[in-house]
Length: 495
Image (cartoon, rainbow, N blue to C red):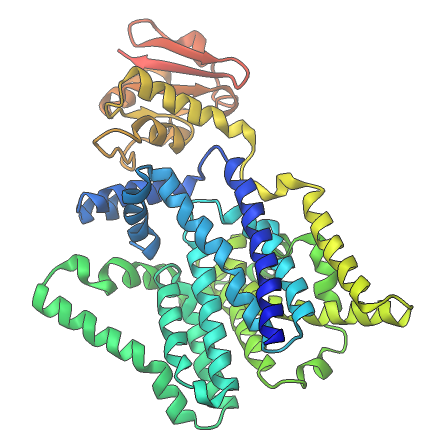
């Protein structure tokens, strides 16, 4: 009972800290991220039951995040708030399964400190208020790991393997890359567990049920929108696996491999947060001895190694390595930061510092390293606010009537049409960067050919255009509507 009360108290502290920091980031993030434009436009199409438009209006897939946004919109009546609240909720709640995973291996104080580092990590805080699907993935991936470890460590709770698989499946509807954890979990059972057949069958049961259910629905209802493979898994598998072998056999594979390693280290340091890296590195001192304390640590090593291999293949295939991808490695690997915390406490204890004060000192270090620079918690800088301002200005003068705009940033047309009854995706419009090097007359022809009503000129984008656009403007083509002097933007109406 005492341990349960201690866990409740410590977890409440971690959760409250996570909530407060995300709330700070929430109220200090005035402009949505680029991905948010696509997610909300697609969610609006889904709300109208226009699945064809939903797939054409942004990404080539529909994820769980897309489906949750319309549900939350019915609650809040605001598209941005609806999308942001989903990230906020799951990003904050991710600390709960993380804490309980640690409690399988470490004492409450160590679990609390590591969970605090996870809760206040600027990467996880900032993405918890972004319009992205990642927080859903974090929560359900960690929940799946928790159920998996609980099932293997407690024989009477073997049925938790069902919940583990279901959690991974839900995480997979947010990020297809959960496949790494699926494969890692199966391999761990096959190589490190007894009763392999029984545990494998229990773990796989929800997948078998889902496959049967989806095929039955597809066969009898004959609605493509219900065919999970078509609207989600097919585009995802094509993106990551199509032509992968040819990419691995290209002559520049060695150069790409070195670049992948360099990028991987850089992106992981960004996600881990530089002040936390020393604690993480200390974890690897005499780690072989630490791992022998519990054979289930091998599970986290396996997931971490498989994630690194997958990240390498992802880069070779798509030549992109976003910090968001490195989270596949960070989630299981972050557990090992506890070893570093233990070693620091032991080091301080040998020098006469009481254990409780050592705990407090590390907590102060973690919190200070984040709060000393609160701007790291906020995803975007203030210089993007003008895009929102410009879009809302156009919405005001157009009375929220759908309007086609070509601008240097997609968020301008998004804000201009947010409350319009018609969804303007802008996917088929001429690209802004292609217009910059066109002759003036050709540009005007393109604008009119695309049915554009407003054109936003931005000085920094046109510095290499070869001519002074504002001076070249002819009154018969364009009329100036508004200027933003500080940001050097000019809004023109097409005549």
